[in-house]
Length: 119
Image 1 (cartoon, one colour):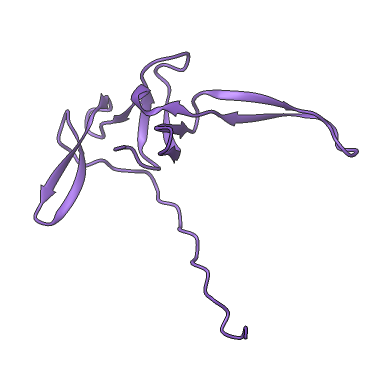
Image 2 (image 1 turned 180 degrees about the vertical axis):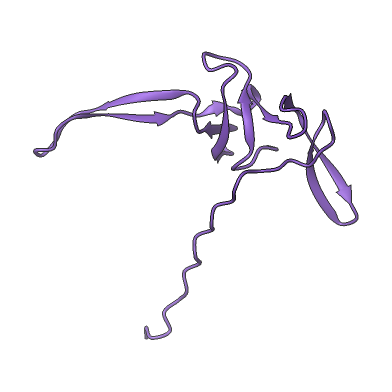
């Protein structure tokens, strides 16, 4: 899949056609993405153990074929391609050839270090 987290995308088909947002999660096994601001769902959760019931809002996955990356130069949907420059491989938009500019990157989780004190 050529889509990555924080890519600006627009929905091409379905009830949310035309809505845009950024990818918050990529589901590689099912070839789906979760987009902030598109395909909003409501789940009703039953109350248990004295806690009241509630309505939980969340964004459901959309198949990757139903979204397209937004070209930074033209602000229109575009397909994704690759360009090799020496030994570096960069993702580009097919319409303008501009590199894809993702939104702000999230900090990676700190790697767990084994405890040296454990015996």
